[in-house]
Length: 451
Ligand SMILES: OC[C@@H]1[C@@H](O)[C@H](O)[C@@H](O)c2[nH]c(CCc3ccccc3)c[n+]21
Image (cartoon, rainbow, N blue to C red; front, side, top):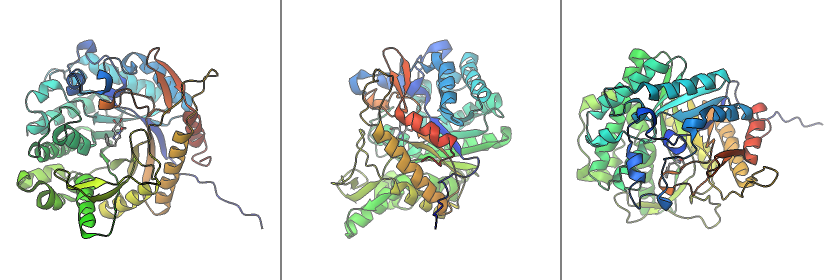
């Protein structure tokens, strides 16, 4: 009997796209009246980034945006997730609007729409105006109003042309990297500042969603990076460490945003006296109805008890694991497990995979203009299959944005790590689609059947 296998297709209208972020690709951070961001400052501080790399040029997208949109169209993308640099719009962070900054994003959005590519706009992807950091930044409770003011400027200018808005990209990384471990801007290292910055990020998220409900007519959500934590052993210590790590990364942001409270481990097992008592009105502000959530998935963490500060938990390298250039284990099953967990905990809110990808050592552009990146192709294939499996288990996954469209500035790691499906020659700014881009184009054109 002939066995007919239905093609592994994705739901009708599944949004196939790619993601970037302003500071990582644009360059020209101070052009046309823009103000400096904390990343302009941080990268220009000696020793903060690999090779002292900065975002001064990056992929020169600020000047090459039109060719980049043409490139997206040539790949058949249906959507493009990008972020707006707050300090291009409001050079001092609040008050005066820099029209030229607004015009850049307005032109970009119009160009995307003219090619049938849906824009998915992230308001905050880590590049806080330096002027606001001078006023305390995420440690100042007023930032909820500052962020809502910025969001409102953007909503009024672009809502309708932009129909999917994101408030924050990864509050966990902003906090853990910028305030606890100091690896990311603004480079603080304080157990006491960390909960305050984290809570103000979520208050700002809530204020921006509330402002959107007054002005916008479409959809708004939150993007989080979450990572399944698997206990290294069944020992009580490892199980407790895994529970702490799960609460700290995976529950800390979606719980207050959707459920209206923080996981108890944050106060009781991690921050202790460094965890302030928050007022009820803060929880009410943070818990705003979301139209969708975005999940950024890269890897899992097999977790054990360690003496790390203050989490007392750490990842165990897997002897038989495959690892990317950023030291992340390739573990697609973790994505399926995580999506099912999120569905069960948060009520199957429409979900986009807003980032997924990998840095592997890519060969140079070959003479025939090819960049062979089989490891990245394999990574994308496995993770799209994992998403398909989650959909089969009832998860409402609406789209997938590969990280990233272009090789770009990997924050403190500079240009040393390449995540793009398109190679960038930083000397000439030439873009060359890698084999993974060709593969992804076919996946999109076949609605996933070719995967
Ligand atoms: O590291 C690759 C990408 C970044 O280039 C994106 O800007 C950022 O949204 C993003 N998040 C993650 C996962 C969370 C994470 C970020 C940085 C360091 C460790 C974990 C990976 N990535």
